Amino acid sequence: MKMKSLLGAAAALMLCGTSLAYAEAIKLEAGKTTNMVLLPKFLGILVFDQANEGAEEAHKELDNKGKLLFQGPTPENSVAGQIEMVTTAGTQGEGAVMLSNNAGDQIVPAAKAAQAKGTKIVTWDSPIPSGEGEDVSVAQVDFGSIGGVLADMAHSILGGKGEMAVLSASPDAANQNAWIASMRETLAKDPKYADIKLVDVVYGDDQSEVSYNRALALVDKHPDLKLIMSPTTVGIQAAAKAMQDEGLCDKIKVSGLGLPSEMVSYTKNGCAPEFALWDFRDLGYLTYYTAYGLATGQLKGEIGETFTAGRMGDYTIEADAGRPGAKRILMGPFTVYNKDNVEAAAK
Image 1 (cartoon, one colour):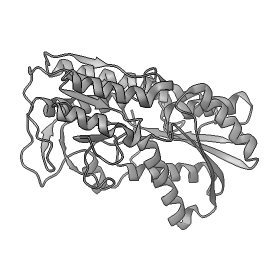
Image 2: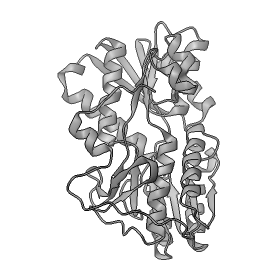
Image 3: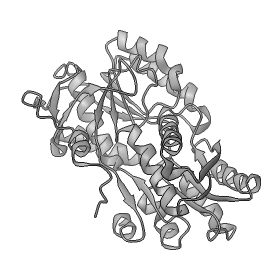
Image 4: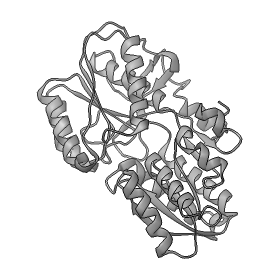
């Protein structure tokens, strides 16, 4: 797969997880026994299935004698369901919960209670906004940089001028909210984007039918709309399908974060000229290595601690600049897809 670099050399070095300032990386000992739970926002989303594939790969590679459970709530019960499952994991003495948080800070009491019982809480994809109740977060990329990428794709597609709207997942999704805030800041502070107007932000709850209908509602509400930016794989596909079904692809484009396998036809027909994403299998794999190291006591979870995550190399725990007091591991990088590379990536 060909990648279009989005970051400068210094940022790329940081995102790959390496740092010349830290001591030799910790090599995790395989064969330990700890039960682990991979808890997505909810079940039935392809990217979360891919994250589970990566976690399964790491589970086998590390020869963990314990169980790896992949469980999640329904879309309709995501917030309450996640809180209940974290609570149950702590009660059952699971070694670690790997959480893609969809409950905002509402998850904090359950996460803290689980930690008190010895369960490590490692977030991935979407962190706990306050960082409370979280041992460390595995961030796919620096959240601030995503806003710049979304703004750049909007500028490219719009030719620097026009109205755009955002179709997000849920109002409590910390990752979506951080990316949208970063995009707003980028659009506001750089004169390059002065002629791009963000007219609305709506939520499709990461459900295809809801997102489809919200996209069409945006078209009805904003007659001069030129672009729907959806930083969620469910939303971008639903919005692109809506524009295609209504014959609006020549008038209104779609962009955001999507899977090449789901977006290839929309990119080739011009509905979604550009979009971006990272590898969710790698995200699940790195998250598992992190959680295994913490749950087995081989990692303390301290800032500056460096460890080797199998085939992905060395990563360092660092302070999360966007969440004071929280800690993170940056995976990186991500790729912008267009008609030149999407077909190969979709295979």
